[in-house]
Length: 239
Image 1 (tube, rainbow, N blue to C red):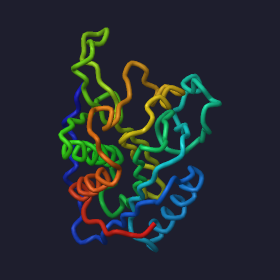
Image 2 (tube, helix red, strand yellow):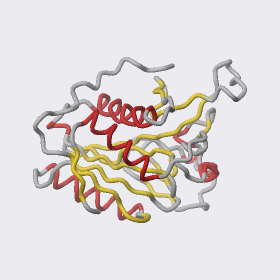
Image 3 (cartoon, helix red, strand yellow):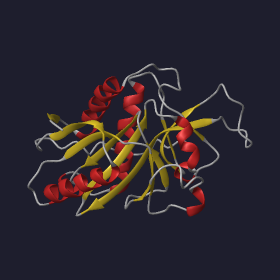
């Protein structure tokens, strides 16, 4: 069921310091990324650092969220598997997928986890919209989805659809970490080693799979613009 009733209007906070915007060079190991997030979140919570969005690409790997079902790890030997404290189930990260680690202090904004997740979904939806792709929320499935009218209807008579972006978050002292992943041009076959997010009835897609010959820097520009429209001003920071 399409979800459209979520209010994100209270998230921008006028007068707060701009959110630091950092883009990593090369592939970032997952354990290194978690260590960096832990350090940044502690500094933000203590008031020693401004909020941060960190854009990375990972080498191929699977992560298991707090709700992961072991049966959904179909090929455990294919790539490294990392247990993580974020919400959600199994997901894949790898080259060609933009991961945005979002570290915001909700005490400065709005202490509402559900609204924060909706705001992250809105960032993805606006990013896709800028490329003429319609992304949609679903009442029973976290993430952002695109309809595939060119495919046969599903067994229940509904239109086929694929997931293009996943979300998984964690909070510590009301500071968020982990975040979202948007499929730009990953190897979609790599998702075959898991049941992505525990959902087997739907597929996975990417911007390139949808016929958009986009490059990561182009997507980063649109992602930043969408983020600023939801959460407020950002300032570039060296990786």
